[in-house]
Length: 545
Ligand code: CA
Image 1 (cartoon, rainbow, N blue to C red):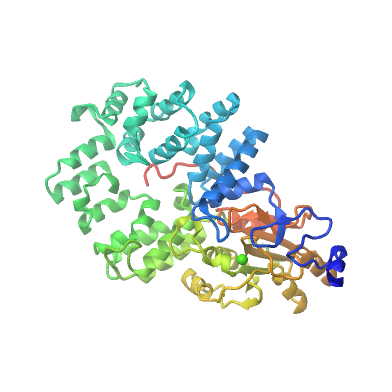
Image 2 (tube, rainbow, N blue to C red):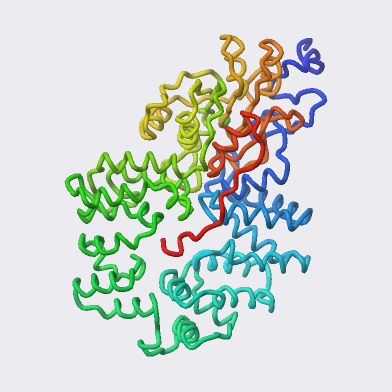
């Protein structure tokens, strides 16, 4: 009893199942206390991490509902800031999936504030950049509001404001999704074409009879491929129209010659997704130097990766699938080519914003507790938050010179991860550890106990800490006091929940969103005291991918 009363007044060491006295901490989902994330920061986590798969503690449905409430809060507070945030994440390609941004935009388009609605529809093309995005938007917005004039006009403009070739590509390549097709949207929006060619394309997409000679671009290519009679003809058409895989009749997609013809026109995203197909058909194999050169060469061009908005998680997902030598849903096997694996490792690093090394002494603490080991990040099979955080940490480990890396649950674990390792090895090193409870204070406590000098602690966690006798923020303060080092703490949030172990009132602590393209660079900027945010220039992306 006595120690409990003492704890009420002790601000240096408070058990994590109690709030720090006088603080604004709230209960987290694990029975411990953390701070509540600022609504705008939580919006950032939602946009980048999404809610797919939920968390260890919260179902996907509940997590989505919670986030929707928070999203609406931000929308109401400042719709311009809200839309700027949505566009920055979406157009900047910072998130692995565009769906949360599209959902957030649909909510704004259904706002009861007319100015917010208009502003949301204004940025529709920046967020819904390809047909599939537009279908997702239609599906979300359809459940939230009616198809009034403003919405119909915005969707109509989405089609009309494109050059003919781009329009043909969107119509042919992305035909339907989520029960929506161009035909459905065109019937609702009724856009008035500005040219003969545009008119023909829109009529064609709406399901009307249009003579082949009036069609252009990929729409023409699609119609011609439908009636192609031989592989040779299919290949000739693919070359002529630079046709994507989506419009090639399925029965030809097992042929290495067809894939060879598709290869030059495959966008980088499509290339990453089809490494298995390219291997299964025999085109991408150890002896096939030319194909391996072409594929690896394309995957390792930094500018091209940025331009195509390739996200590191896309590369990681491709790597996980490719190196296991068979598809996630079965069907065919292949022998992974080491050079392709190497190229994927390089591409992973290149897909992040450029990281300027800090030159500081960094202590990386990876939460390897039970809750980090369950579930999937962004719905990617085989990618738990724990594995994802190891991969993310590697982006920092590879650029810094003084890095110590440890795992923690209720106890500290030495991880066998070194800068020389590739992603597969790093992921393996973290995959077969026992599960445990969670004490996010351990990195700081360990550094203090073993006199490890650290300028910054980077803690990769879902912030559901509960098991320790001292809060992480207190452990950091104690570390600073004892060592005289004004160490910083960066919390890398790996789940779209509302919690953070970072004290919002301490300027030396920062919460960043796990697995945004700018996460490692934002960490480096904060740790080294450089200010400013790195934002990727919006660019043309998977309109060809
Ligand atoms: Ca945990």
